[in-house]
Each structure stands twice: as structure tokens, then as C-alpha cells.
Length: 435
Image: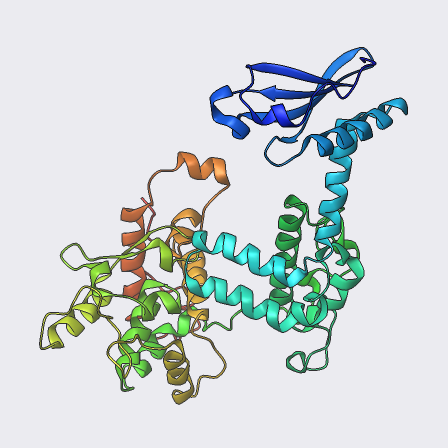
């Protein structure tokens, strides 16, 4: 390192200088990249050798750093080198330290709101983002919301999952409503992962289930609180539909259509006319309204088609493409999900749920037909197989599903089986092959 320092004078530095490096001594240089650019074309650098390797460290732009300030920085670098400390490594360590200090002010709630904002464009609909916000507001924010995300540890995550709230009936959250609790846990895990990637925190994710919380909490499948949607036994479907047709209101058509298509409640109540090709008897549900997030074509059986065609024919004017097939009292809004639930209550069937009819269909397909599992699962808009299998399967088994849905509609049109000798209801005299 040169012994002579302070070679440069401050005043001439403002003038035009030759392209290249201009030494001040002691490893400090003024680099001129563009003589025509004035101050904007100059910067300060510190050059040194450590362990036999030449290195170069930028100190700052000429217009932002005076000669005196540049000399002070060079002096600090030389002090570090006398202790065998690399100035570049020292600066990086200081930068990370400052980031960590700043991260202490970033709360879990701030990270959660930022995570939702970053991801909501890729979610199926606005309701999904709303569900995130509502669940976190109810269960997570009161406990960890205002805390620095760096401070969220296992004990705090457990405090969220084991809290006792009024809607939990005195039980712990994880035990009372395990499905909801697991969604909250999973959302906390995603937010913490996001915060770690953003360098707002360090360390293991305290909300991780596998190999971690699974050792501290009972599995959801072992909890008594886990209940499936109550379903009507499939051999009672015929009588149920006959009773349903005796009721009044638009909800009657929507309910029977839901049963015949094995669709979800929201998919039926939100159905719009532009989703239907009545000539081909196909209902195409767009990806944004499907749980799996991909378009789903539903083959309409004769009866399902009659329901939709009947509604179409009853309209005084041709419906607009964005009009609802099953409107509510306000024709600009769809029939509410509660409308179908209310219909069940009027029928004095509090023992079953609307969603449970999908299970009725699935049980019937498994026990009363020879259609393959893949066909039945596809009819429910479930994703079949792993990602590799999905990549190779291009079709949606549509024609096979049409046969399945025709068979289901035929079964639903028959009175319920009463005879002990008729435990298996025949489909046109024989079990139907999924050819």
C-alpha cells in the first residue's frame, strides 16, 4: 500500500478529468467512467490486497461523497485490514445486522397483510382472500398480530391453536374445529416462510406440521370433532327428490339440479347462462368458480337439461349471458347458499346437509356401478393422481362421465327400494360397465 496519501486536492476534482483511476494514496481512488458526465461519471473505490488476492470495494458516488468523507471511509477500511478483517465482508455483516434490526419492527400482521396482497392475484376469487383475512383476524391477530414476526415461536403458535374461544364450546380451538384450526396453522406457516424469504426473520418455521407440530398436537383424524358432511343414504334419493318436487320456490330446481350434477353449492347457485351450451347439453364451470382451480365440464343428463331448459323457456325475454340461472329474490343476485339450507329445514331434514349429496353420489357410484374410480372422481371435479399422472392425462373422461350422470339421473328418478331382496338397485337390468 503506498506510503504517500492525500494526493488529490478537492477543488480540481470538480473539473473535467481523464478517464481511469486517480489515486489519493492509501488505496483510495477516484474512478472516472465518463469524463463528459461531470460528477455523475465519477465514484470512489478502495483497492486492497488480502491473503494474496486483490479486491476492490465501492465506497460511493462522487456527487454523494466528499473527498474528506471518502478518506474517512478508506481509513476505516485500512484499520480493518490491520486486524485481518476484509472490509467487504465487514460491510455485508453490518448490512445484515441492520436488516435484522429493522425486521424487529415488522409485525406478524404486517407480514400477513403483505403476503395476502402479494398472492391474492393468483387466488381463485376475492372470497379466498377474504377467508384468509377473516380467519387470521379471528384467531391469530389477537395473539401474535402485533408481535414482531421474528418473535413468533412454537409456544405462540400453540397458544393460537389451543386457545379457547366462545365459538369453540369451551374446547381448545384445535380440538373443537380441527379443519379450521389447521387452515389457520397452514396460513401462519406460509406467512412465516414468506417473512423468512424476505429476511424479516431467521430460524425454523414454528408452524410447520411434519416432523414438528405433529409431535405436539393430536392428529386431526383422531379427534372426535372431525365430522363429515351428513349425507342421505343413496337408496333414499328417489323418495327425497319426489318430496323435494312438492316444495315451492326457485330453490327447488336448483336443489334437484345440484343433486343430479353432483356439483358444489356455490357452483350451482352462481351458475350463469353463458356457462351453458344447451344444444350440446354441457355446463362448463369456469376455473375461477371451481375449488380445484381449473375449468370443469359437466354433462347434463336428460332431467338436468330439462330443469335448465324449463327455466329458460319460462323467461319472458332471452336471458343475458351474465344473468344467473338460479336468481334470488333480487334477480341481479344469485340464489343464496342459505336458500338451499332453508329448504332442507322446511322439509324437516336437519339430519343431512346440502354438500352431503356429493357423498351420496360417490357412494352410489362405488357400490352400485362398475364405473372406475377415476370417472367418479372426475365427475366430482376432484383431481386424479399425482402431478406426473395429471401431466400425462389430457382428457377429462367426458363421454364416460356422461354415461355415469345419465345412470345417476335414472337412479334418482326411481322410488326408494323397500324390499330386503332389492338391496342393489339395477341400472337398466344390469350393472353398467364404464366402457
